[in-house]
Amino acid sequence: MNNITYTDWGLIEYKKAWDDQKVIFNKLMDQKLHIDKDKQDTLLNNLIFCEHPHVYTLGKSGQQNNLLISNDFLTKINATYYEIDRGGDITYHGPGQLVGYPIIDLEYFGISLKRYIEMIEEAIIRTLRHYDIEAERLEGATGVWIDTAYPEKTRKICAIGVKASRFVTMHGFAFNVNTDLDYFNHINPCGFVDKGVTSLRKEKGYKIDFEELKALCANSFAKVFDFKYHSFFTKND
Figure 1 (cartoon, helix red, strand yellow):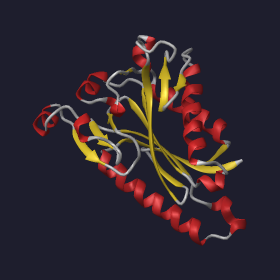
Figure 2 (tube, rainbow, N blue to C red):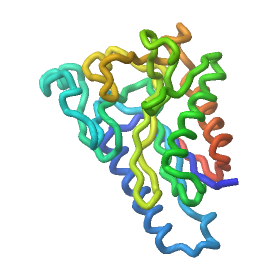
Figure 3 (cartoon, rainbow, N blue to C red):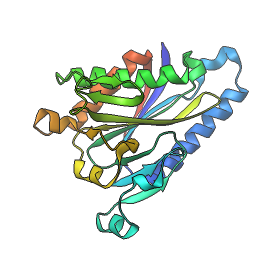
Figure 4 (spheres, helix red, strand yellow):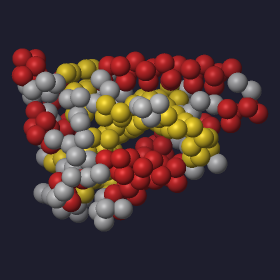
């Protein structure tokens, strides 16, 4: 079983979270390069959960024209915009969305980058089953989707965009729980113009208990990745 530290950052500004990720990423990278093989179980692998105020982020392979609004309109809707170093195109983060940042050494877990993304998808799919929602993967696209057999109805409930260097990861996933979906109207989500987005709240028709959802999701990650959470930290610690 693989040791990992779980941290809940609560609601945090995107730029601060990105900067804090880099600090943890660099520490893990440094530790990985200098640690003895027989001490790998002491590596500082992390799973971080948080929410962000309204923000749009564009991955390094994205197209800026997938942001459909001006800087003035960004200010009007109280949102910010960042071009960042993950894969993927544009996405939205906001309150009521569960954002997860696994900062882990894939070599320690013995998995490829492709398999890592599949395992994130699987953890979200398992979480959704607790709410009697059958979600799936969509061929040719990362993330977690609903109604993939019906192209006119296909909608994304969780986006994934990661960075990996020397098999150490950062960035992660954005799971729409109680998310205000109106903010997606101002972008082509993940570059798609023919696919919709949804949230768990929209699918179920009621507001989701966010703390319960986080616990279920953390448990799903533990099972899929064979994690053992040896430390827990929350925004209140």
